[in-house]
Amino acid sequence: MLRTVYATRYVLPLREGGSLPAIVEADDLGLYVVKFRGAGQGILALIAELIAGEIGRALGLRVPELVFIDIDPALGRNEPDPEIRQLLRASGSLNIALDYLPGSTMFDPAARDAAASPEASLLVWFDAFVLNVDRTPRNANLLVWHRKLYPIDHGAALFFHHNWPARESKIESPFMEIEHHILMPWANEIQEAARAARSCLTPPLLANIVRQVPDSWLTSIPGGIDPAERRAGYVDFLVRRLAAAPIFEEEAIRARTRLL
Ligand SMILES: Nc1ncnc2c1ncn2[C@@H]1O[C@H](COP(=O)(O)OP(=O)(O)OP(=O)(O)O)[C@@H](O)[C@H]1O
Ligand SMILES: [Mg+2]
Image (spheres, rainbow, N blue to C red):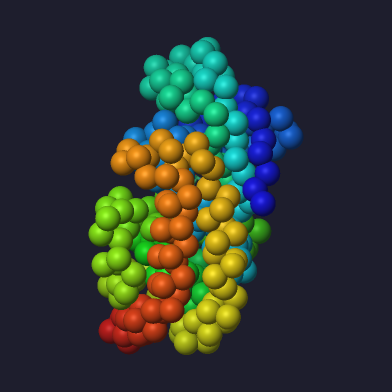
């Protein structure tokens, strides 16, 4: 279960992030990178961050701890930047945040960063499963901290939810985008990773993750679908995509063969 913390201080905007994420201090004295519900990407990005992030963690990937962060809209009243004031005003109540990793750097092969094959293979499998297009050389979204890899930023995963009525058509997607994955050069055990991943992700585990998505997020999605129905839709998608895993696994292996 995700913890809930209360924001006490807006520390610093992370300007490189498209969604204007920021470092925020919370009442447990921790520093967090907050994804705001009032940001342009909207609530679906927070839902993806939660569901995909927790699936990654269940698989054994080092996703930084995710927490709900409760924000008082008044937190930003003394911020000089009107864009930040507006963002905080629009982000009252529950947002999502990742534990801030101080001194981490972005994974960069040009700086001789490298990955072990089992971990790279598992990360490729994971990103294909959750349909995450955001782990490319242009935007690795993979932090290196104390020489270990920490996947971040899963807001673009599960993009089927932007076209909810058509989600069935994505269940068996081979996810051709996997060929651009930043860890593809190291991922030479995709089959082994797939076996481990499939035995780890069970339907009850997936349902437990989806259950944590707050009602207040689900009811703020336009379309008026009941939260229970939305959650059932996510679980159904994930369970059936897991059953169809050979389709995206074969594509990932093919993409790697093309690369070599
Ligand atoms: N947990 C963390 N610890 C340290 N730095 C972080 C953490 N999370 C994010 N960052 C830094 O903040 C930047 C923006 O975060 P993130 O990628 O999650 O936001 P985003 O708005 O989705 O970005 P984009 O759309 O540009 O990829 C990252 O590129 C990274 O440099
Ligand atoms: Mg990013």
